[in-house]
Image (cartoon, rainbow over the protein chains, first blue to last red):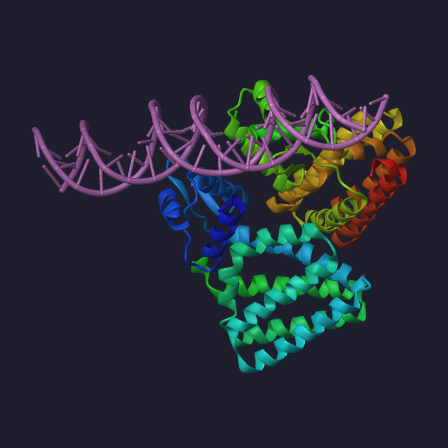
Length: 211
Length: 211
DNA sequence: AGAGCCGAGATGATAAACAATGTTGTCAAC
DNA sequence: GTTGACAACATTGTTTATCATCTCGGCTCT
């Protein structure tokens, strides 16, 4: 078990909620479960701390970090900057193949919205965003956005429990998909920013207690 | 010597060129010089590897990573997204104090441009960009931009050997400063993007051999 | 009931040890 | 002089042991 594998393992457990915010991550427990050496476990936890996913207090060790409203706001701002620009670059790029895949994913989403399956919608939503980041052809967008979305995954999922939220989000997606495929870069960027802003609004309205 | 201090130490040595691209970073040498434990040294090197500043090959250890043209392009694209948005947010923000500091720094730069001191100009240039990122009120912009600018520092410095380049860059700065202080968010963002784009152009024209 | 204390448990940090691999120098053969 | 095999050395990768420090729970004593 390498450090990277351990980090992925922990990220996945945090992302899916098995490790809840505030929960302490005991080295020995992790060693028992993963059969990794203590060094690796410590290393992985410290790196996750620099990513902001866990908090480490002296002699109290690591615990899953919860994020406050202001951090959520900053994360969404950063997403506006990065995903907006990614949409811009994707629209301006000459990449018909990927644009067709975006279109297909969009159509798939439309189907599932009608059926109201929020779990599957969340998956397709991730895929749709990922395609756009791929389309930007910029590896840094991937790296940065991974750090911005993993801590929010659970919260994001909550917003998709509302059928209206899904419908609104999908309307945003439709417009953005159209703009990207048509090659309207500025429009795609503006729409993507609005879409992210709407996501933040939905999240903040959802439940003040969660943040 | 903590891991973070070690990382800063290595970053600084890479940034200033004492550790040249391709140069191997031997653990024992670093231990001799920094008196840190081997664990810390290894930890620091591996983290710098995830940052992309050094490359680690199995059983060959760490070496300073050099970046190619495409990476430079992607870095500047990411800077356009992030610094552009930062300028936007700063212009829209209600932060007279920091805006006045930006103005003061701008005036200071104008003075030094006349004298043609490229070293000092590079310093003030960093400060000017930093103020704008501060003005955005977004910690993630700081984190991300640090990763985008440190590997480029030496190259950036080279472009400032040209007096015309300094003059052009400072003209960009003047316009951006004005837009931010006046609160013209959209204009500030567009100008900042152009400024970063110009920086990339200057860098690529400068010397194909360096990349 | 509450203050103070103690020990189990956990973390922080370093060193030692060993395996696996890369690197370099030597020497013989051609 | 060049090349190739081979051995000695250097470096990295990994695990384990060790010890100090601190937290936290329960315990005793008043």
